[in-house]
Each structure stands twice: as C-alpha cells, then as structure tokens.
Amino acid sequence: MRHVFALVGSRGDVQPALAVALELRRRGHEVVTGVAPNLVPLAGRLGLDPVPLGIDSAALLGSDLVRRDMRSPHPVRRVRALRAVASAGWDELRTGLAALLDDVGGADTVVTGLLGQEVAAAVAERRGLRMAALHYCPVRANGVVSPVSGVRGPRTTRAVWTLGERVRWGLTRRAENEQRAALGLGGTRVHLPTRLRDAGAVEVQAYDPALAPGLVDEWGPRRPLTGFLALDDAARARLGEAGSGAGGSGAGDGAGADRADAGGAGAGGTAGLDAWLDDGEPPVYVGFGSMPVADPRALLAAVDAACAELGVRALVSAGWNDFGGSDGGAGGGAGSAGPDPDRVRVVGAVDHAAVLPRCRAAVHHGGAGTTAAALRAGLPAVVGWYSADQPMWGDLLRGAGVGVARRASTLTQPGVLAGALAEVLDETTAARAAALGARLVPPAEAVAAAADAIVHTA
Image (cartoon, rainbow, N blue to C red; front, side, top):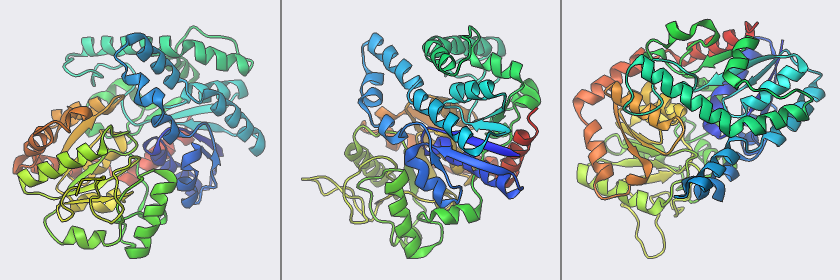
C-alpha cells in the first residue's frame, strides 16, 4: 500500500506522525512524506525523503498575526486573526498535496494531523482516496474530557464541545468551501467531523487512555486511543540531538539541527551537557517548544529566582525562542549578567526521552508531545499554557494529581513560577507521576496500534 503523509504545523504536530510513517515503511508499505518546509531537515535526518508542503510554521508562529493580532484586546481584530490562522497555508497545502499525489501516481491513503485536515480531506474526497488523521488530544465532541476548565458532567461537557465545533465551522466554512471549489467539489453545509464520520475515515487518538478514561468506550474503533506516539531509539539517534548519548559530536549536531528545524536562536551550546547533568542534583526541565515566549530574558530571570528560592537547578531548552548568549551557560542581554550558569543552563534542542528521566520536574507549554515525554519520564509538571489544547492538558495533569497549570504570561510575575514549582516538587506528587508514567502505553505499542488503524481504514 502507498500512504501519503501531509503534515503541517510545528515540530510537535509533525514528529509523532513521522514515527508512524517509519513503522509503515518498516512493514513494507510505500510511504511518501510531505512536511512543513522548515521541518524538511528533521524528516530528512530520519531518512524519509520529505518534500516541502504548505507554509513555514516557524514563520507563522513568529508573525504579527500570531504574536500581536491573536492577542489583541479588540475582539474584531482577534476574530479576524483566528480566522486567518485557522486557514493559513491552505492554498499551498492544497496545491502541494495535489502535485505530490500526481508525482507519485496516486495513493491508497492520505494521512494527516489535526492541522490542515480540512484540505487533506477535500483532496482525498476529490481523488477517491481513504483518509486517516492523527489527533494528539481530544478534539471531537464527547462527554468525558472538557475543553474548558471548570466544566463538569457529561451533558454539559458535550454541549461545550458542540458549541466549540460550531464556532470552528463558523471560522473556517468559507475558506473550506473555497478549497473545495478549487478542487472542483461542491460546497458543503456539513462540518468536517460529520463528513469524516460518514466517509468512514479513521481518526487515531494518539494519546494515552489513562488520561482520558471513558473515551475508548464512547468513541469505538473509528477513533482508537493508541497511546502517545514517539520515535524509537534508532530514529532519535539519527536526529543527533543533545542528551541522546552521542557525546560531543552528537551535541554539536543537535545544536545545528535546532537552528535548522526548531529555531533556538541564542541557545547555549550543548557540549558538556551530560557532565552538567551529572554534576549536581537532577534539575527542573524548562522548555516551551515552538511557543513564542514574549520576554525570554524575563522568563530566565523568573527561572533563576525560582531555582534560588527552592534550591534547585534548571535546564532550559530554548525551542523557537532567542534567549540570548551563546557561551553554553544561561546567557543574558546587554547590561545583564544573566542567571547563575551553575544553577541555570540554556541549550538548544534536546532528546526528551534521554534528558527528561534525568530531571525531577518539567515546566512546559502543555503541548501533547512534551506532555507525553514528561509523563513517560515520570515527572510532575507545571504547564505554562498559551492556547489550543494546552489548557486541556494542564487540567488533565492537575486532575491526575501530577501537575499544576498557569497561563504562560503569568510565569514571569514575582513568585508565580516558584510557587507553582513548589506545588509539584514534593514526594507525594513525584510518586503519583512515577506511577502514572509506568502505566502509559509503551511507545512501540502506540506506534504499532496507530499504523494498524491506518492500514485497516476501510
């Protein structure tokens, strides 16, 4: 069988799906991979021969549209920005995916993530192909997991989801019908979840049932909960990122890789990271991935202050942000000595699976990938959320007794980060986190289950 992956968005949107692509190829299937242009180097190091598809996700996340307009105090400007972001890159995705399918002579299945699946579904419909999607969090109406903090009860939870689906359809309906018209399809008044259900598409729920008990029974085989997806050891080694045990050369490759596919401008060097980790108590990991930190210097100061107050160390992964400095320590701006480099270490990309088990807690944005990696490492977490599914993950961790959640913008306020960390740096919370981590579906089983679901899509 031939499966064409159409993967757009940030690294967290793309990398889990690449694990499934590698598994399908291992089984003898033909896999064709299209990814966001800025993530072509990442997929290339995994040997998937990727082609660029859609738009540069780092550029979008760093744009005024995301950083300024989506946070505007003016509701009209904010709604316009939400509508624009929801359909950003759809033209490029449609034309790129159609060209890719033409180049390879068609496919059996189009596989996509959550982002861009409206376009991928329309292309699949136009060409009579099967459709599969990978969801890294609950995004369909249900009575189990609420998308909004404070909502309780199956009936109310379902009603909130239904309202959210209507809002999403209102934001994207015009753009989606424009894409359908460009493909020669008629317009539709039915939103995507219903159309995918009626078409028999499979929507793989790529997160762990331990965090969402009840969804397995509610959704059934068309929305199977597989567990969190992750690359295996060999694939992670090919990425050559820090902490993978590759030593000095691997760390250097990781820093370069970080610039190539994950930003991290101004991140400290990764040489000597193993020695730093070994030379003291396990640190708190701090990383916000692709999320744009509004004031990196203020965040570093908050991290340093929290470490000083609590007597801990911190390892900060810069992600797609510029934390300043390039000396392998914490860095700092003009006129500022920066945090204590013995207490706070700033690096670029790191191998979560290798580094997080050597930490004692995690502070992160609540993206599904980082959430999964921290849980698998048995770490309690402070979720500093921005938007989308991140508050939901914060609520789920809090409900499981293994984390707390704060709006990301509050973490630089005096005492907020230290207070949040103090809540999770206790033996009871650590024990709960370790127990939950041990219950999660192993990565290899999760990836295999996702591949099975895609292969057996009818």
